Length: 493
RNA sequence: GGGUCCUUAGCUCAGCCGGUAGAGCAGCUCCCUUUUAAGGAGUUGGUCGUGCGUUCGAAUCGCACAGGACCCA
Image (tube, rainbow, N blue to C red; front, side):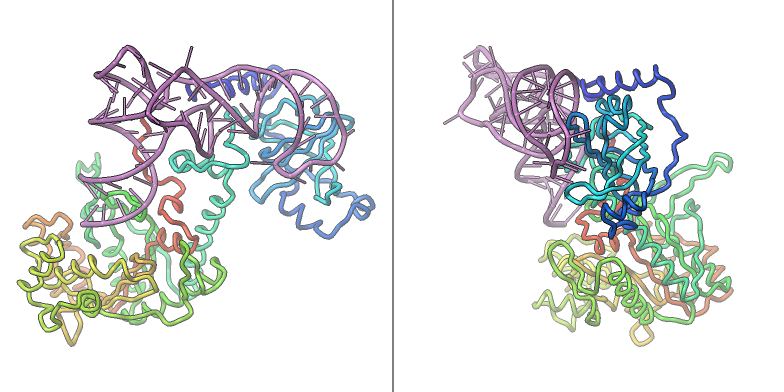
């Protein structure tokens, strides 16, 4: 028998049809005057003597999660958005609706009115005087003790996961809180939150394959954005000076525990500041988030404790490459044939057009990146792989840029912005050359962005933070799917 | 893209050197007026992910496919 028409559903459907024959099966005239958690918190101190002397009448409603019928009396627990409260039901008080209740199922949504009292074991409960079925649930919930563990069902039918798994609800509440705290943090610093286009004629601001769509009225190809960067910096040219955006980016790439095709990114741009200021800001932000949502500066993630109290390590790409590859000669880190030989030795594929900067990064990613457990700012990113970053004054092979790693993952990327329109035009030309050489992640030449820079962009620092990965870290979630309400999955067969 | 493992009742899981499919919870019938995974008695429920093969016989062995988990690139 298929899941769509199994016996349990058939039985519940018959119960629904019986309710329909009696009248309105899906009433919407019941109103609550209390939530479960409020009821419990407001009367935590009160014993039965107090409750008898000061009767508290409440109207509560929610989904029935437990049901224990004992002849002429029953207990049930209902869950609302705040938590659960127990109902005590007696045939003597409820009459006909008690008989009806015995036929209702775990999962049904009920409304109850009654007075508070404590049971023999001291649990604050509602002695129900009026009970109504508000919504019949046709599908059985997962096992009350084991809950729902099958990841496929948890992700595909998130509504079921949210009904039965408290921890899952807690993660998403925490996610919302984290995002709100980030906004508060930036708003306090006089940043302005803005919205920029998700559909773009050119997908710029990052190295990634875009999703392609089509605008019918204009008969033109458009792209879902891979980053908001170039639009936000136009706003810096416009004089907004401190802007940020928290919203979705789309990258047409594979799925993994750390990648979803659409993911949430914070990007902020801060005029009259440089990349060092961003490192300080990120350090402060992470600490304040950990204290607010993870219980302190010692954050436990997947069994390991991360101490955010100590200053975060700051180390260059070159130093990490040398640290993890003792055979590499520090004097030859910009020697292309030498680095190619090392890539071959390490089994790293490379393209003919790759220069020393790109090869360094390949070696870094293969040998060092995953070892960066404790919070670490990696600096000294080569200009070749940083087409939008300001070149370092002392060493233009490098840029004033960092990436931030924790638990072996990239969490943020920040740099002093390239505001020299002629340098930027030259970098775009290099990207176009790479694209023509077959690198489909290379950038386009964005003429309007160059025009904006030609009006003059003040010296600026810009930071991007992967919100999903940040939430994963702060909620101890092993997979990005655990922090996305509806993660991308292959279609159901 | 490569490797390892998983898919059996609504849920959580046994069964896997081939011999007609099992438990707990949920459901159904009955008993029970203070339960806490309530308890007691009885009982229903399965194209064992899909397809092809090996075999007298396949949940079990082989191959392919689909979906999922983890590791690697």
